[in-house]
Amino acid sequence: MSRLRGLSACAFGAVILLGHGSGSPVLGQEPGPGPKESEVPAAVKSITGKEIGGHLRFLASDLMRGRDTASPESKLAGQYLASHLFAAGAEPLGERENGKPSYFQTIPLESVTALEQGTSLTLTLEANGARQVVPCKLGSEFFFYPRGLMAGEIDAPVVFAGYGRSQSDPKVDDYAGIDSRGKFVLVFDGQPDATAAPQGPRPAFNPFAKLAAARAHGAIGVLIIPPPGRGWPADARALDARAMGFERPVMGLASSSAEIPAIGLADSVRDVLAARLSLAADSKPIPVLDLRAHFTFAARKEPKSDRNVIGYFPGSDPEKKKEIVVFSAHYDHVGVNDKGEIFNGSDDNASGTSTLLEIAEAFGQAPRAARSVAFLWVSGEEKGLLGSQWFAGHMTLPEGYKVVADINLDMVSRNDPHKIGVTPSPDHDEYNALVPAAVRSCKAEDLEVVYDSDEYFHRTDSASFAHKGVPVIFFFAGIHEDYHRPTDDVEKADFEKSARVARAAFRLGWTFATSDQPPAKIKPDGKAR
Image 1 (tube, rainbow, N blue to C red):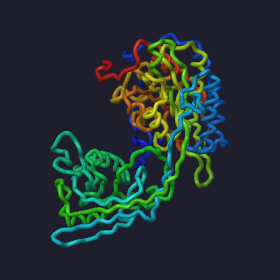
Image 2 (image 1 turned 180 degrees about the vertical axis):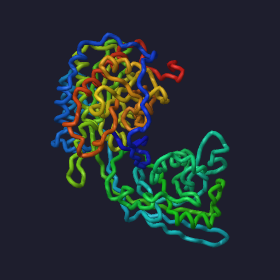
Image 3 (image 1 turned 30 degrees about the horizontal axis):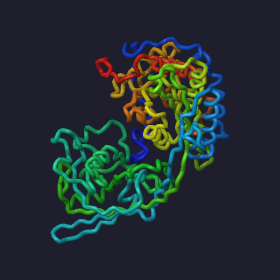
Image 4 (image 1 turned 90 degrees about the horizontal axis):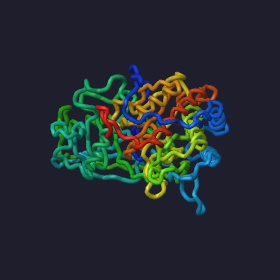
């Protein structure tokens, strides 16, 4: 599962690391909405822990060197998956290669290395005929995360937009009366009421919400300062170029539109601006500011590519076959670190990858369902959901076909052997008929659904489908001490738990592949919409 929370491949790369949810989980109950589980083919019994373990032992072996995105080992893993799809009888649903259908979809990528040398920021204050130039030093006086930025120069005036809030209520809309189009926006960090800050340690620099608001109002960059009387946390003040992501390659989609920079200014620079511009913590937005910013970003690009793997079993109904139930999992992980340690990613996500293989083989043995059923393995999830984002925007489907559901498996081989996390929960905006049906399917496999995973909804590939309006469900067994560590090895995997999850997911997929209607979202009152 990706460490990037809620960020698309082209979105600003502020990396936020999340731990376990501390609240008590809400257990899955026997809900009413959604179709009852239809008669499930005997093929479900063919899904075994031993076979899942066989796939895992290969995919999470040292031979695969952590299956890093766009690596030779990633391509080998993709070929392994395609070979098993062929053996299961699935038809290719990827791009055409040499005039023939294939199981592969190319993901156009690029590796971007931000360069410290050549990256600069200069602020110029001009008021009453006086001019003051404030050169800022990277790391000590300004800092930003370079993911998604395009190399080049920006020189533009600056407007002040208070705390950078953008809401429908004009009383709290700091952009009301501000023309920020084509300009930098200067905003305060945080919120006016410091007591409203989230509990626990504050992230060093988390500009995503302010960046999104500025972008929506046509700004070309954001400058963020702590309000007078407050300062950045110590870890923000200690950011150096390497900690920001400079001098190390970052993978992204080659087709991505460039992001706008969100730049934090040190307390000392804030003090200069506040004194000259009369900015107080309760300052109102200022439509015209005597300030200009010149920002230069230097980077080196290298084209890359990887592949999604996809095959399907066409439906038997002449019309319903155009509606596709997709099973998805990511097969990439994070490779090898500078010390030579291999991150085998057994749970993350060789477990979901292997589980999906067993489900595909079971569907190959079952009668054809009314709807089509597809199996999609994506790469680049660990770099920001790149493969699923690319597929969601460039689906390789027959003309007239559409995806009506996505069942995603990511990290399903650890923790309590008889509990499985599911998101979206009934409290989530994306709650839909897949979820109550999953409770019934899990119960049939001695699994208890636990609604403790909503905070991870945007950190895995089902989110890419949800953003396109597709009902989704994400099966997730939870974080553990080996998450994104070289100790996530196959010896710690619970093959039998993965098999229970696989059989439950098969039952769920079969239910909606044969139901009268595809899954729909459910309102809080329990009614479908």
